[in-house]
Figure 1 (cartoon, rainbow, N blue to C red):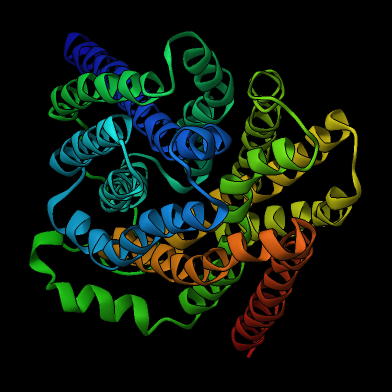
Figure 2: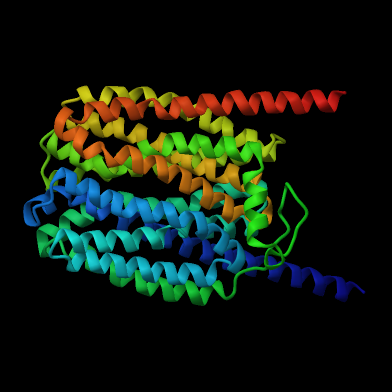
Amino acid sequence: MNSTVSDVVDTMRHADSRFIIITSILLMLLGIILFFFSLDRQIISILKTTLMTDLGVTNQNYSILVMAFMIPYTFCYLFSGGIVDRFGSRYLLTVLLIAMSAATLISGLATSLNWLIAGRVLLGVAESGIVPALTLAVFHWFPAERRAFAFQTTNLIQSLGFISGPPFVAWVTLSAGWRWAFFIPAMAGIIVAVLWFIAAGRAPKVSSNDENAPQQEASAVPVYQRYKMVLTSKPIWVLMIARLITDPFWFFYQYWQTGFMQERLGLSLADVGKLMWFPPLASVFGVLGACYISDRLVARGCEPTRARLILIWSVTVLSVFTFMLPSVTNPIVAVAIMSGINFMCATWLSMATITMGGLAPSVAIATAIGIMSALGGVTSIIFNGFVGTIIDRFGYSVPIYVGGAFHPAAALLLAIYFLRYQQNNTSAVSR
C-alpha cells in the first residue's frame, strides 16, 4: 500500500516537473516570437531618416508606410482571433512567423517605396494573429492568479526587441548597410518558427480555466456564436472602447519617437543607438512588477478584473509627463520622459489584454482580443494617417499634446463603468 502511494506521489512530482519544464520552454519561445513581433515592426521607424536619404522617403511617404502596416493589421484582426480560437496556436504561429520573416526580407530587398509598402502590408497581415494566439495559450496553461505574470514573462523577452532594436539596427546599418538590419531578423525568424512548431507539439492539454461560461470544446462552437458572445457583452465593449481611445497614441509613440529625437533634438543614428534602448528597458521591469502586483491582488482575494484595473488607473498618472515632452531640449531628459510614457502604455496594453481574457468566454478569448485590437487599429489608422502632414506643417507638439490626453480619458471611462458595475452587483447580492 505504502509503495503504491509512494509511486503515485513520485508520478505526480514527475508530472509537475515535466509540466514546469514544458511551459517554461513554450513561454520562452512565445517571448522570442514576440521579440520578432516588436523588432520587425520598428526597424522602419529606426531607419526613417536613413530611408529618407537613400530612397527619398518623405514624411508623407512615411505615413503611407505606417498605414500600409496598420490597415491590413487592423482588418485581419477581425478574423485572426476567430481562426486562432478554432485551430489553436501551434500551426498558426508557425505560419505567421514565417510570413513575418518573408515581409522583413522583402523590406530589406526594397529599391523603391512600393516594395517597402509590399513588405509592410504582409507584415501587418502576419502580425495580426500573434497576440490572440499568445493570449489564448497563456489562458489555457495558467490559472488566474498566475496569468498576468506569465503573460508579462513573454513580454519581458519581447521587450528585448524594443531594447536591442535601436543599437542593433544602428550598429548593423553603420557596419554593413541598412538592408542587413532586415536580413538578419528575417533569417532568425525562420529558425524560431521551426523550433516553435516542434516544441508546441508537446504543449500541455488545455485546462478548464473559464471564469465566465461553461467550458466547451472550441471546435463545437460556430464562429458566429463566438462573435455574438463577444459583441453582446457590455463590459467587453467598454474595455474595447478604452483601447479604441488609447491605441492611436501608442502607435504614434512607437513609430515617431525616433524621428522626434533626430529631427527635433538633432540626434544622429549613432546617438539613437546609444540612447533609445533605455525607455523599453526601464519599462519592461516596471511592467513586470505591475503584473506581479496584479497577480498578488488576485491571490489575496481581489476580483481579477478589478486587480488589473487598479494597475491601469495607477499608471495613468504618468500621462502628465507626455505634455512636457515638446518643450524638452535635453536628450537625456527626453529619454527619461519617454521611459515613463513607455511604462504607462505597456502596462495599459498588458492589463487590458489580461482583463479581456478574463471577461471573454474561454472559447472566444482570441476572438475578443482580435476584435479589441482591430477597433484600436481603426482609430490608430485615422490618427496616424494625418500625423505626417501635421508634423510637416505644425511640428511634433500638436500630435503629442492631443495624444497625451487619450489615456486619461480612457481611464476615466473604465472607472465610471466598472466602479458603478461593481456597486450594482454588490447591491444586487445584498438584496
